[in-house]
Image (cartoon, rainbow, N blue to C red):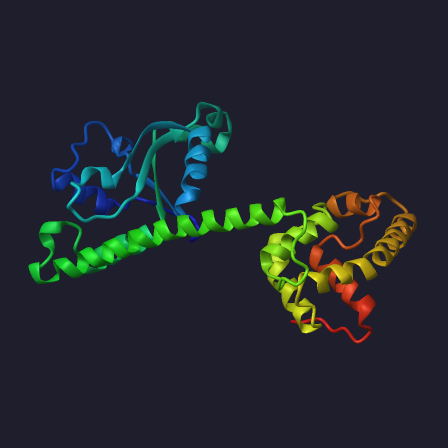
Length: 289
């Protein structure tokens, strides 16, 4: 997610302005406005769009959806933004707090961060329409629009290249031991040698590799040597600590940490485990803050 989800309810002035301008003809009440309730979702990557569409379509009654870019000719500028007009699903209305929402429309607006930059810049410059742009600035506006669109496409290519690289790592039966350790290599080795039953690996990789480098663990071989030398010792200590904690509790606790303790896992995070390995090898090990 590029930004926290944004939301708003259309204010009276905005409703009045839309009616007075003739852009909306109200017949019975304000519940006719399809954008009375607005939600904006800003994503980092184009590849995330489909997941958001699926979430919306599976949880709301979709009235319609459209892309603003489809309203433009090939030679016109503008920002792309996917819009969903939805209503609360009938099953939601069984919950008291949602009971009275059935008559209201909700507009979801979904953009990438690049699309959002373009939309907000256009709003600030008041260039919402191609006819509004001074002729002297039209080429510059066109370049900015093209650059921001290119950013999204380049991110797609980057993510595809990264996926291909990670696939090659996973499929390679013999990663070069002299390769310099990077985030993706580190992640694959941890998954292969340690497993996936601890928490938060992706969020901890940067801190793990930083602390490994501090102790001159720079290559694939260096890291594998650390695991080979210290990992089994730490596993034994984990089981002893876990058993002791369970036995000293008068009542059986619950929760994910306790479930790990029952499996003999004391370090519920990968970072904690790697720090234990480093302490085992380096008695003077100190945490990096």
